[in-house]
Length: 290
Image (cartoon, rainbow, N blue to C red; front, side, top):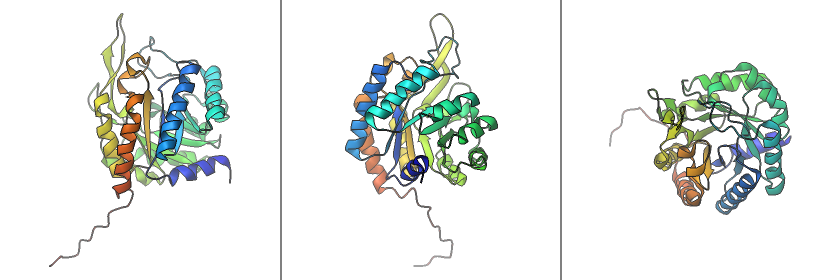
């Protein structure tokens, strides 16, 4: 069994859920190494299967003034160092087909951003790396779309695919999380992940000094969405975590504070252990009489 399939099987069977987590974007090597160590320590203590996440390039920001990160070459060097030093799998995102081969040499999971979930060439290029593919559902998409997106990966010869709910547009500058999507996305016949931080973005909802806009967010509701997702029975949780969210250059308003991570995960683990959300409820419609 190859390493990607082995990891995929570990994630599929992880109880009560697996965790994809880290700072939104690579700010510096020192910061990434610090965050990776702290996250591994916490998840090891709680017995959670953990994959470290950070982006080498934020290529889909609304404003050209937004911080983008170190770029492909430098970013992959830093992520490879995390993988070697702390023996943790890596997930990071791609935006163009040409990036997939290089990213596949380092990352264990390649993430397809929500805006690109229907881009066939990108999905196929990512699939051909043989790595696990995590496809985020577009904010503009019905959950049924993810059946087709996952199938594109499988038809390219890769069975190791996951789908991720990250909210649905609710007006111009807001998102809403419909818990029904966690159930409906299971029709893709693969693990379902809940992105509990991006789901609370307020896209282009924050004006920048000197012009331009950035994403706002509702950090205080992260526990609410997380509790809901775990109770429903998702397979994995995706969340962005930062030791100093107010200073984060990207998506600060929806990054969860590191100091509260263990406390929140402890609660989510407890919910996951008592919930029967992963089991389909068998409804008996035959007449009932005492």
